[in-house]
Amino acid sequence: MKTTEIREMTAEELGTKLVELKSELFNLRFQHAVNQLDNPMRISAVKKDIARVKTIIRENELHADNT
Image (cartoon, rainbow, N blue to C red):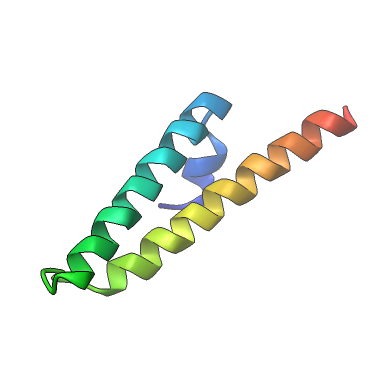
C-alpha cells in the first residue's frame, strides 16, 4: 500500500483499514506459529502498512489541531 493511497482516505476509512491490517497481522502470526505461512515477508509488509496508516492518522490529528 502506497502512502499516496493512504493520504486520500478519510478518517473513517483509515480507522477501518487499521483494524483490517491488525486482524491480518494477527492471522499471519498465527499461521507462522503453526508453520502454515507461505510468505513470512508478508508479516513485515503488514507491520509497515500499519505504521504508515498510524502515521497518517497522527498527521491528520496534528493538522486539525493547528487549524
